[in-house]
Length: 128
Image (cartoon, rainbow, N blue to C red; front, side, top):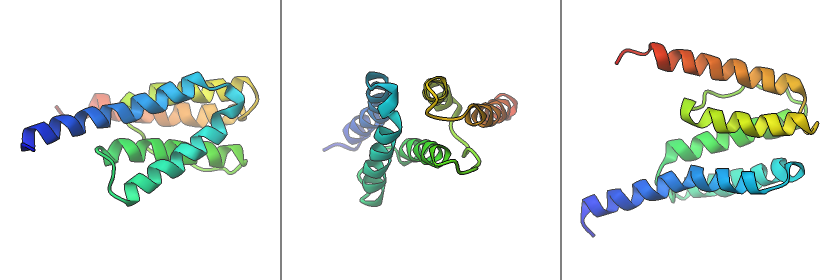
């Protein structure tokens, strides 16, 4: 297959990873989100380990977010990892759903918001 065609296919697969994750999480009842995030994390970790992902950075973003959710649900005080700004708005929506139903404490949303603000500031002040 021609190199440009491979790149095009890989780009579409990459874009679909986050889209698929978002669609799945949107479709599930809030009470099942933490378990679904854990399952997705394990699947994506397997793909990363076997080098089966078109976008390792996007996959790592989802894995990091899912780890943060799992640790927060267990009551562990963990810092929210740096996440891409373009992913953070959606991740924040998931956290808000979980906090609203009592699946996560409100402090988790505060911590995530602080991380998001820091990432947004860095993105806005980065040299062009």
